[in-house]
Picture 1 (cartoon, one colour):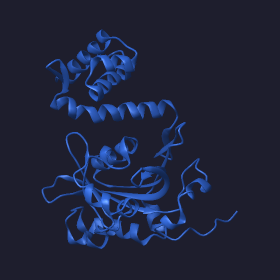
Picture 2 (cartoon, rainbow, N blue to C red):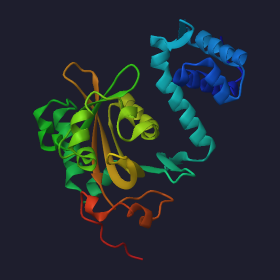
Picture 3 (spheres, rainbow, N blue to C red):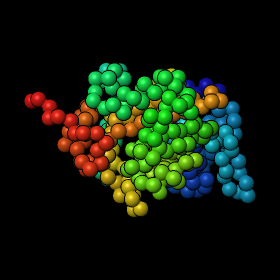
Picture 4 (cartoon, rainbow, N blue to C red):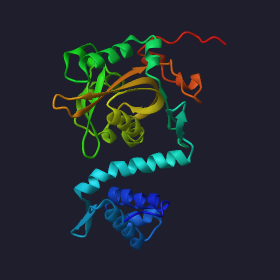
Length: 293
């Protein structure tokens, strides 16, 4: 079946993702302000297009099938990225990815992708070493060539449904930001269940999938708010992030993330004063010298 009415795609995905989250048809209809017949029709169309059953009904309750679970994260990503594009929150500058998102409740996420060559022009030795270790190890994450930066890495593996954390270095930005409790309890968790939660999981999808596809490396500058502490109070954080496409000894894909908290960011549309709302005590590199006027 060819979906010729492309504007219907958003409605199909909204019905699927909402029902997958509630597993309750009445609640889904209420959230979507729709009808039971419409939601059922949308699910039937998607199942025909995908060639697989997405839900089963057991004791009058909806449950996701394996195919439904595998399809859910991608459907959520498509919706999130489509909405962001329609709201002029995402785009490309000089061919590189850019995000500028601010919610009415104060949450924000800014990202600017940068050329890898900027790492060599910068002053951060850890990022330079990360690229060198990756090249020497030929991407094999367990290779001894990674040892000089291993304690600074966070590593992920892609499951059928999501990205799973497989390692957290004791000196990584994640460990020093969230503390030992989360450093030790994050292994094996899917990205949406980590402290950053679903909002950050959505923003990880495009960079992670790009690196997984090209098995290369990617360099981003990011400013956002991340929950911290037992009450998960959002606090501003500004960082440089190097994503390294790696592999395990069995040749399966591994994503290594090397993050350095910094004020030395260039993100179009984001004032330096906002970047510096992160406390200076959280910096992982020296503040940049004042720029010439």
